[in-house]
Length: 125
Image (tube, rainbow, N blue to C red; front, side, top):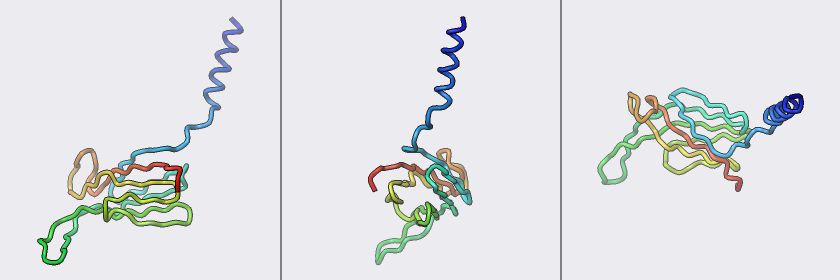
């Protein structure tokens, strides 16, 4: 009986003391006026809100485009995102706004003025 208890204690101790899984990729839903802190990346992301703006390009008809006012801080670097669909890179981190909700009600599990972000460690930059 005693060897079994020792074996169980060793397994539990090994499981609890194993290093945590390194950050690779996560998705976050960020409401309007919400701040997301990701300690393991030394990063803060602020959503100042998402909405719609009118775009006028020359003689083409005006149209609405969704946008978000996102401020990203990592270490000494500050970047703004949300005006186009391209991902933002800070070092080896890629931040992609997968979905914006510029409307005044919940849409696809995203709160009004919120967005869904995909944050991925690329390991390259």
